[in-house]
Image 1 (cartoon, rainbow, N blue to C red):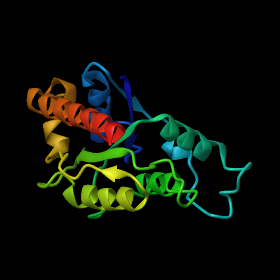
Image 2 (cartoon, rainbow, N blue to C red):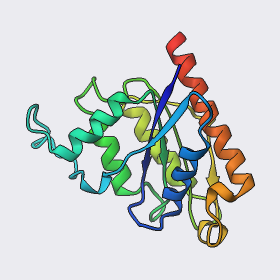
Image 3 (cartoon, rainbow, N blue to C red):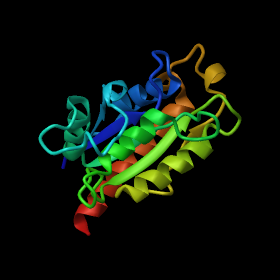
Image 4 (cartoon, one colour):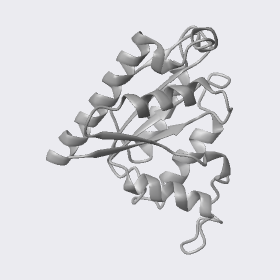
Length: 187
């Protein structure tokens, strides 16, 4: 069974270490798993129920929902902004939580990982993202965690895919998320 994992990155910066981590996940996905990096979160307007009207949902939000509906699982990459989740990632979660009771997360497995400059690798933001995804309807796999500290120095000269330790950890994260899709389908 081929599994499609939608990757959402909570940083819009061109040189984002979380984006590079997501790119590594795409390359390191095990056989039978495809990690698809969603492009376009910057274009999704802030969630507003007034514009979330069937038949006239903004195109960027509709594209996000479409990609999420086609996914079997989710892998979110979160840096930490002022001790919490970045607005762009929270906004994506908000759009995917609607329509109420029928959002795109729909009980699908989800994991949150990431890297940040601080000594804890963004754990506060990642915990907040897990909480939000769970409330939005995702089946958060709580024991799949990867928080990489010191991102700016660790990845200054090396892409995450070329960091043997990170590559091994990331491969395990994707494989375990892939395995959870099979478990969810069997349940």
